[in-house]
Amino acid sequence: MILQIVAGSFTFEGRLETERAPKTCAAFLARLPFESQVVHVRWSGEGVWIPLGAMDFGVGYENHTSYPAPGQFLLHPADISETEIILAYGGVHFASKVGQLAGNHFLTLTSGLENLPALGKACLWQGAQPISFRRLG
Image (cartoon, rainbow, N blue to C red; front, top):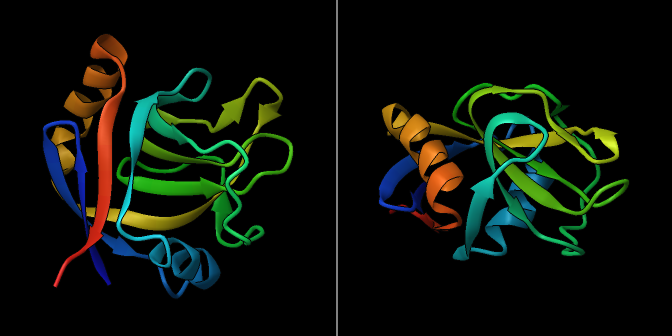
């Protein structure tokens, strides 16, 4: 399944990783359209994140990593830290004030990757940017 992601002034397309993270993908799909704000990470490196507080997606770990590649979205289910979604635009070692985190790799960008560094810099220097996720087709 392909999603359209609009973040700040940039539009991307992404593929859900339904074979590798079926529960996470199903939980995210159930919340579409999904709208929030994305801000620059504090501890993780070159990434942006959506802090979701106590939002419960009802999933545990599957296909989880602490080192997403640029264009990969991870969903961290609430446990030692709040629920959050992180998108790498460069080198990321996913972490928080409590230490290293892992998240479920559930979505991979397939277009617009050349705009990821500009999105990251916009979040860093201009602050929170709107982000939305919608099904395509």
